[in-house]
Length: 184
Image 1 (cartoon, rainbow, N blue to C red):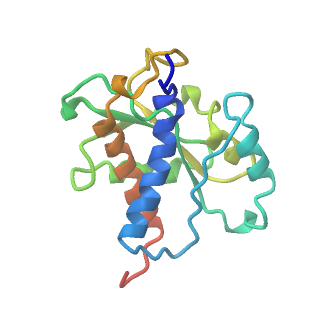
Image 2: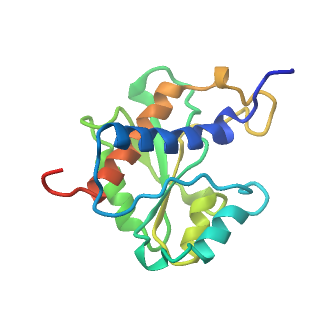
């Protein structure tokens, strides 16, 4: 067991997604119309403490937060056939239009995914904290239930990172589209 790292899906996959979008935007020299903050919050599992703290007092950014994109457990896909890949895009009462815009990014020019919305668990991740403080938020989550959730089997070998990359593509396309400056 020594040397094994657990938490590959919950939630290293989400952190990897955030870092990948930042890497791609930097590599492409993307100059957004708004500031984009890339944040990995702590203490989600014990009460959303990190995101609640930030959303309650975002260091002077409260009037400038347009929306929040959340990635949690985005690497569990049991099918190896991309034709069977789905992403759950959860929303909140104030972000249905943003979800519709994200669904528009689930298009063959951006990704191999299909999308659906099942908001059953939308209050269990960091996006919920932002909703509670009035911000628009989306929560991207794997389409398949994770049999390794909170077990010692939550290791990279048990996940589909090609699928994870497809979710990141959708999110990156949405973030870029919402922050596009003509001539960029």
